[in-house]
Image (tube, rainbow, N blue to C red; front, side):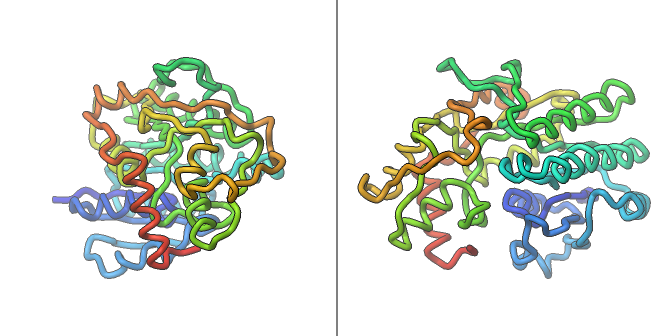
Length: 317
C-alpha cells in the first residue's frame, strides 16, 4: 500500500521528477504549488495517474489551506521543495524570499508537528562557503549566507532541525548541488546547462558571468530525485543534513566549451551579483552513500546529452 505524501513545489523542475519517482513506486501524491516558479505543464503526463490525488494551486503561506490539507489526508511524509530559488531576486527583494523560504517552512513544520508527518526539507549548496579542498564540501563545511536566498534557507534549516530536537519530529535537511536536466527552464531563470544548450542550438553566443573560472558540481536531475525520495523513507537520516552531488566539479568556461565546442561562441559579461558568487563548489556525498546507499548514476556527459535531446525535441523554454 502506498503512503499519502504531500509534495510542495511539485510543479517545479526538480519537483516534477520527485513527483514522477513517487508515483512510479506507488505512493498517493498531493502536489501543492503556487506556480510562481513551477509550471502546471510539467505535470501533464501525470494528470490521469490514479495515484495523483490532487494538484492544488496555492501557497505554503496560506495556513488555512495547509490546515485543511493536513487534517483531511493523514500525510506520512512532506517533501518540502516549494521556495523562492533565484539568488538575484533575493538580493532585489529579500522580503519575498524570506517569507516563502523561512516563514513558509515554519507553517509547514507546524502542520507536520500536529500529525507527526516526516519533513524532507530541500535546502541548497548555496549555503556553503567556497571549497578549498579536493576532497570536496561535506556537511561539516563552513556555511556563508552570501545572499538573502542562502540566509533564508539557513534560517529554515535551523527551524527544521529544531523540530527534530525539540519535538522528536522526524526531519531531514537535504542539500543537493547544482541540479540540471530535462524540464529545467532554458530562459533567464533556468540553470546554466539548459541555457547554454539552448543558446548553442539556437546558434547564439553563450554568455558567462565574470571570468568563468568558478566551478560547479552538476548533478543530473534523475539522480537528484532518487536522493530526495530516499531521504523520506530512511530513518537513519532523521535530524541530519545530507549533501548530494556528482563529486566532480567543472569550471563554467569548461562547461561552455563542452557544450558549444567553439571558444569564439563564448563571451564573458559583467557579473550581476559577484558578491554572492561561490568560486568553487565540489560535493562530498560520502554521508549520502553511508546513510542512504545513494550515489549518482549519470555522468556529466551523459546528463548533458539527455538534456540536449529533450531540448531538441521541443523542451519547454
